[in-house]
Image 1 (tube, one colour):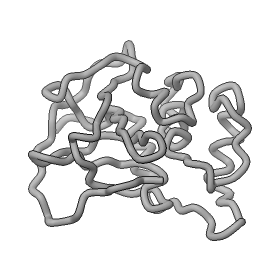
Image 2 (spheres, one colour):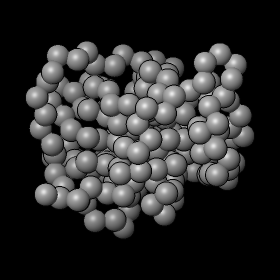
Image 3 (tube, helix red, strand yellow):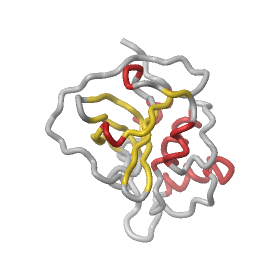
Image 4 (tube, helix red, strand yellow):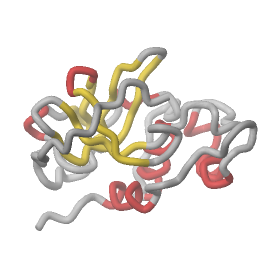
Length: 168
């Protein structure tokens, strides 16, 4: 069995992390922002109501010593980061960037069916979870520069779960 990259292991450890309801903020999510800071995130991040998928990916990468892109809080900043992958080169932990109404979304590749990717990401239903996202929405597949590609595409059976329509 192929070992998964450390940043994906870090992401799995965060499964279930949730935004705080209402005007409150999750101390966990705000702690990620504080550790990364303005230099990495590109903004003063002061509320978990601000889209945090990029913050989640940046946190997992930073925990493995990998430098995120400039303005890492923006999902689409990840579209030119690292090295490009073709769909045939995908492996667990690859960074996937998606179009969505009002912006973008970024998360980690876990597996796929013929039409959707299973994505481990933050700010998916206001939490860190696995979600199915249509392949047609994917605009970039990336891998950290200088890191060996570990694994290959993972074919999964569809369990009938619907695909996500908007991750904000």
